[in-house]
Length: 276
Image (cartoon, rainbow, N blue to C red; front, side):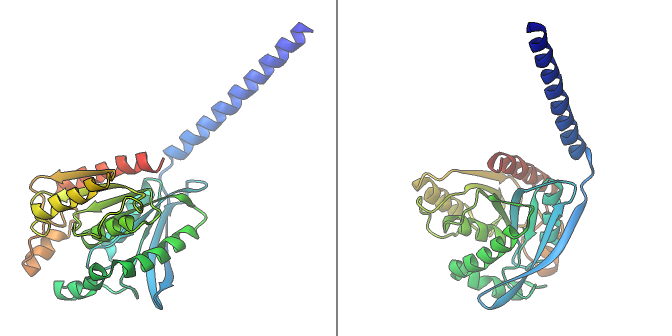
């Protein structure tokens, strides 16, 4: 009787070990596979305006995964924002570069960009309505883990994602890359997201006074945030096209490869921790 019991235990242990090894092998196999990025152009609407989004995810990953919204610079939804969505997809997220302006409108000069961006600075609630519509679209994808959504933004987009967090969006994390810091008044009862700010230390558009005021506001509500400053980096430091645009329009913007790589690395670690 004891021999039969011992034999049963041995068989069960061997079977459990075999299944465990198979599961580990499967995980390793999925990890080792080169990402196969699926790209989709999507449409959604809010305020009676149609918006064009861009979604990217790795088809080699099975099941749901954390999601990241990407908010564009003041130029509108262009190839740069889409590139960032692809890079996030390679990291294992489903990412959506959204279209806050609507109808896929983009600008190729600062005057037009300023006119399109202005209303969203003046009326953050308008941005929230369109952001909500984008989140709803992203949640409609079967790959999206609706309980783990983050948002990142660049310049104009950096300000917008900070405002979305401060207005109470149900986000796990928010990352602002060289975004403006004149944001809505923080409210501890609304802020759910953990925040990372990646700031250029030589950014003339975001002077130290603005940095000090922002940090004072966040500290006053006990917000959980990390503020990273990259010495010598100016506005738009993460965009390889910034130098040419700065020279073309005599704007104090410039690409900084070191700050770009360092801030992207900070973001990767940050999202891994907050979306786990």
